[in-house]
Length: 280
Image 1 (cartoon, one colour):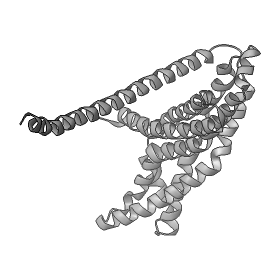
Image 2 (cartoon, one colour):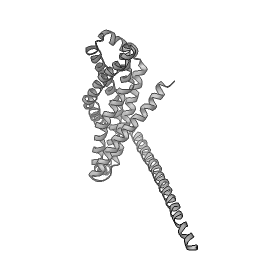
Image 3 (tube, one colour):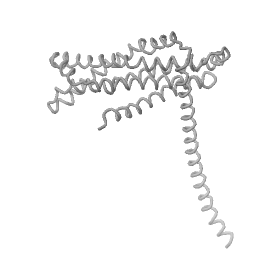
Image 4 (spheres, one colour):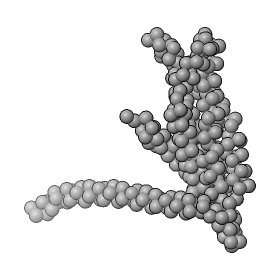
């Protein structure tokens, strides 16, 4: 009888131990994720604090900053312009499809210009630049880390933060607002093209409505978002490239993390800034 009772209790005991082990593994995994997040946040904070401290110290590498301004701003114009153009065109077409059900076609100009200036212009331009410039920065700095060029700069008494990071971040903050302003104009022009030449709107009335509805606050909020997005894109690209792992695999992983993290932060800060500007 005692052996039979022991055999009956053994499966229950094994099940309880299995349940406890699964709970323990889940808690351990959650704890590891929290520790990894806290560690990454601390490393990023130290990186940006060091970079901001180096921004106010000499020497200032103006030529490097101008080169990055050309790379981030001027060379990104084609892809950002095409994105904004077709976004404005699609927005006008879709707005007409929806508003025609309520006889509110006259609001298309308002929707196009406010959507482009407040949200779509900064966000789409930021995402396109993140894919183009953020990845390139991470790959470039990651390759320099792998080939020990960053260590060589330190050997030559050149601060790598001041020489490599500061010009890129300053150029990103300065280049994104004009780029977004151009994207806004192109996007509104795309909406005007569809409204006038496809939907039959009066050109003068459409333009007058567009100019009357937009305010300084609308444009200013979009430009502030652009500057913040420029800081995020270049900051994430430089951080992940500067701290890249060894070998080609490390550089590839740094490039991927730079684009993904910049894209997520752009969407997060887009909501935060919209809340700050327009929440009542």
